Image (cartoon, rainbow over all chains, first blue to last red; front, side, top):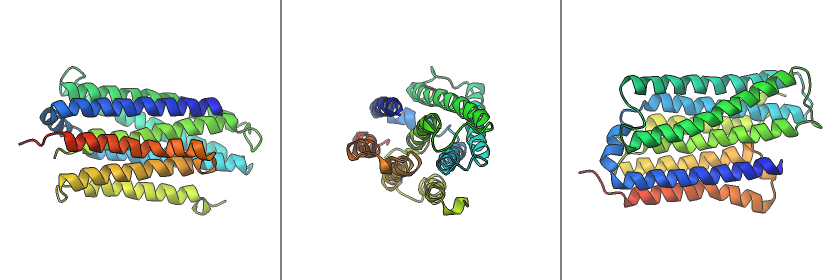
Length: 180
Length: 91
């Protein structure tokens, strides 16, 4: 488990540096950032947040079920986590499609460079996490995990919660931050 | 065990409520930009803290580890808000 926590800590620091760099660029040109922010769909961003929080909850419940050897509950809770992860990927793909179809891409201006970079790196995390949760779901159907065999699902769950909390900061940073 | 008896369920409901309040309440023009932005990031820091403590189970972690992780949302919020206040207003 220690290795996972080192990874989570390092990833958190990297994202904090990215947030700082975003704010530095915003400082130089607040008008462009504000105008570009208005083109984002705040409602979709809010729904994405609700999806990831629900996904984290489902995975947290799955870990609790493993600790109590409630093996029958694990597959549906892990499936819930993987399915909501997939929903986030579909939602973000729809959002990217909308942006590209309106001629907005990473080269449009500094805001969109940051928007695609930050959400793109985060989306890669979501795809990796959804794949790992799908693997856990398949294994859990065979009764693999219980209170003695839970280090792998616990590690994946901690990573998945990291993905969730990064979005909790990314969402207001990109979608909600009005100018003074 | 019923999910309603799980602490994580109540934490999840609170996180959902806070998300709805910031996305569809605090971000409306009804509130000044300072109130909206400071409120959004302080609430985001609180949400991250509870994801760490209850979903990641950091509540049971050794104190130095817990302190290091718990510092992260507040440091991030301070950086973002510091830059936000330093950014000139659009005229």
